[in-house]
Image 1 (cartoon, helix red, strand yellow):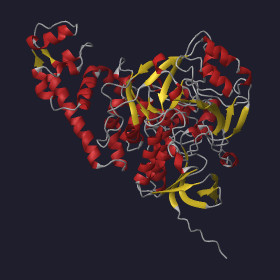
Image 2 (cartoon, rainbow, N blue to C red):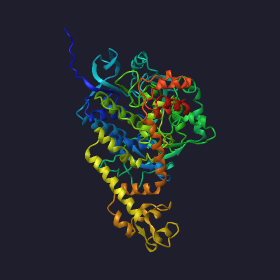
Image 3 (cartoon, rainbow, N blue to C red):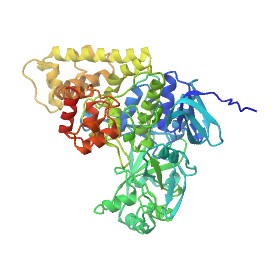
Image 4 (cartoon, rainbow, N blue to C red):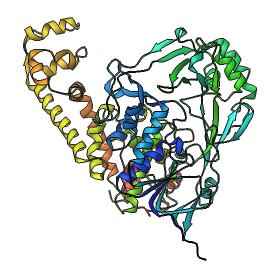
Length: 625
C-alpha cells in the first residue's frame, strides 16, 4: 500500500522558535508565505534563556530597527516590560540606547500570542534531524518521529542546541539548555554537504530565590522617571509601574573562593574547546583577566512581576555548584542566598557566516537560510534581527523577488550582517556602537524615519504606519524651519539663559542659534511665548528630532556625505560566477578570499579581511571602471 503524506507542504519551514525563529516565521507569514514553525518545546517559544532584558548599548537600536521594519520584538518587549531605562543619556544622541527589563514568562507568552494570531503560521513540536535534499535541491525537513515536511525554503535558527554540551565543574552532559536535550544529526549532514563548522561557548549565571536576599545591603537601581518604550506603534504604552533592580559587588573573599574551584573549571581544564563571548566573560574569567581589580559589579535583576526568581547579571560561571553558592554568599546582600539552579557553560556548533550571502541564504544550498547563534552571534537582539532578515528573504526567494539587504549606513542590522558575511567571527559576535562607522546616522530615535518606507514597500507595515512616520517627518521639518527663521528678543530669553549658566544676548537671535548652545535643550525653550505658540501641540518625538537635527546639523551632513561616497562602491555589481582566479595581478590571498566569499559588489569586496586597496583598484579596472 502506497504511503500518503497527510501533512501539508509549506512555502517556508523555520527550525527553532527562539528570538531568531520567531522573527523569521512572523516576517515570512506577514508577507504571505505559508510557514511551519518547528520547535522542540511549544511552551518555550521565545524563551529568555539568559538575562530577562532586551536592548542595551547598540542592542536597543537594533530592537528599534526591527520594530520599524515590522518585526515583533519591540511590541513584545513593551507588553512585558517591568523596567525601562535609556542608557548613555549623559553622552551624545548617537550613544543613547534603550533597555527594558522584561517579565520573561509574559515575554514568551506574548510572542506565542503574536505568532498564533497569524493564520499563515502552523506549528509542530519535535526535533528536526535532517534536511531533505532531492536531486541536489532542498525540499524540506525530517523530524524525530520520522515525518517529512516539504517546503520551498528552510530557515535554520538552532541556537545553542546543535550538539550542545552543558558544563558545571567536572560534570558535563548533552543539552541545548539546562533540562533540554541537544539537537543531533544536522551538523553532521551539513558538513557532508560541504559546510564548515566550529564550536562556540556561552554561559549563564545561577538563579537565586529573591526572598533570601537582603536588598538593604545593595544599591537600588530604579527605572526612568518618564519611561519610554521600544515600539513606534500606538498599540503599546510605556510601563507605568516599574520594578527596581539592585547593584552589589564581589570582593576579594569572593574571588578567593572562586579560585579554589579553578582546578575543576571546564574552561581552565581544557574541557571546553569553543571560544566564549569576549565582552560578556564568566566571573572566573573576570578575576583571572582583571586580577588587579578587587571587586566586580553585580546586577540583581528580577525575572518578572509574579516570581521571586532573580537573575545574577555579572556572575556567569561554570564552576562546581558548591563553589558557586559559597562564593555568592560572601557578596553583600547574598549572605543567606538560596539557589534555584547553578550557573553553567554551554558549548555548541556554529557555522562560520562567511558561507552566507547578504540575504543570509547559504552559498552551498539554494533556499537554505541561517539566522542567530548558528551564525556565531550572541544576544537576543542580534539573533532576532537576523531572523527578521532571513524570514523576509526566504519569502523573497521563493517568490523570485529581489533580496532585501540593508547597507552599513542604513541600519545596525546592515552593519551586523555585513560584518558576519565579510569578516566572519571565531568568537561570539556582539553588536556595539563602535562597530558602526555611521552611528550618528543610525540613532535609536530615527529608526522609523530610516526604515519604515522600506518596510512598507516590502509589505511588512501598512499605509497607516507609513503615514504616521511621514507626518512625523513633515512636522519635524516644519519645526526646524521655524527655529531657523524665528528670532527671539533678549528680554524674553535672557532669564532662561542666565538660569542655565550661559551668556545672555544683547540683540535678537535666531532660535536655531540659541538651541545650538550645549547648555540649552529644546525643553528649556518650549515655555517661552515665542516658541510655545508653535511647539505646544507637537509630540516629544518631533521635538527630539528637531533638537538633534539642529544641534548636530554639521556632523550629520558630513557623515551623510561620507556614507554616500562609500555607497557608490555598493552599486558596482560583481557577477555571481565571476572567476577571481583569472585575475593574476590580484594577490594570491585576495584571489582565495574573493572566491570564498563571492562578494556581490565592490563595496562588499572592500570589507573582506585581507583585501587591500590595490586589490580593489585592480578589480575596478577589470570591471571596466
